[in-house]
Image (cartoon, rainbow, N blue to C red; front, side, top):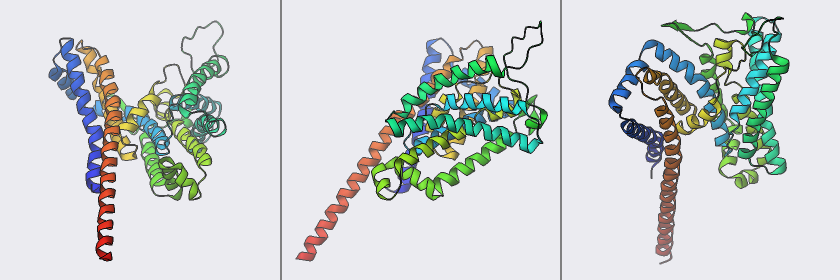
Length: 369
């Protein structure tokens, strides 16, 4: 099997998953007495508006960053399911630090980003150390760390980081202090009353940096080699234990940036209304995007568009839960399709190796004669 055919086969994974997801969603719509064609037509018309496209980009940016964080772990064969907790604790503490200081704009923004990355990396590093030192699987540790991050974050916000309340007033909004203007990013543009967040530029740069780091450096080669075969990587001089911790730190550092788009461009503080579930959605985005920055970007835009376009369903009396079904089927289909393609490729490689061995044996027999 040629490399081109293998790549095309892998590209069929997300494509087939998306087609199957919409097919299953159509069945769900038919089951509740709705016309799937009419529902999808309304979504397409609403989602193709100019302001909807801006909203799609805004929604896609945190999903893209989350997808990159998960993808980095996947390349090392690590399942960082704790991206959600890493993102939330990083967003909270970076917002608190950003609100406590007033610096020149570039330094202020840089400080918030650095704090977010350090907190995210530190929280993910706990799982890395537990795996290396105690053999705790990263799925178990990161899931538990998600709950711990949520609890600690809620405690800190309610008791220490919440903005001061005037005496005698009752403020139902629980949030940190507002970040000064020097720590805010102006919008790139405004379309139909919706502002495009400037952090999209940072996200693009981040994707380029991740690509160069993972696919164009010695470190990236060692990371991918360790993920494929830790024993062979260790034999070549790579320390798998150190690579596990380093990869978790890198993944967590990227995860810490998930909330920066909303923090810089919309909320300017950490509140209870901050988006949740982005870390888990990032797993789906990474899988659909084949763990490659370009594929992750396409998947993030797709999920962002679906989230935006689904808003029209409520106005037409169609349950938005249909979209939840669509996302769930995409994830399940991608996992199944990955395994099918992996087995097909492996079978073809074994077949090709066996044929090459037979040819070599034949040539040796002819040479002996």
